Length: 168
Image (cartoon, rainbow, N blue to C red; front, side, top):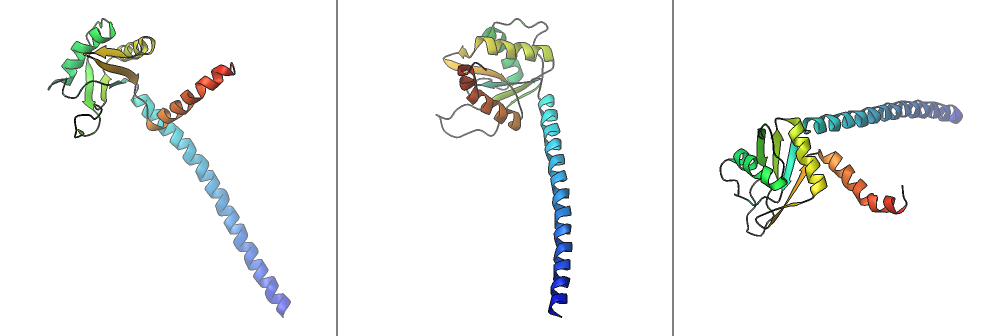
């Protein structure tokens, strides 16, 4: 009687274990699908940001009420690029709310240019020229990437000196 009871319990446990294993396999499949979808989402987000240019270091309130006009007037002299046709923006804004205090860093400006070639020209010039100076302020120009891509690029940049030492 006792052996039959153990056999019944063992059969029940085996069935439960096989059910759990089937669910675990299903979860692994879902994890793979989730990773794939996240990578697709990151790719789509980066593609939607491809015409965006990020400007770091412009002092707050320097632009007045017309940020588009300020950038249109300032960028050619700042970068030394003559834009034909003149720069046109889909949108431009500062990131985040205003920060209280005088010694806080200025908020970045994100501008979406209407012409992809102009955005590429600005970013390429910034890569070769490095930071610019405007009224004693250092201005940096860069491409706008998703959070995930920015983190991956930051991790890679941290490895670059070591890779260069190893001549990889």
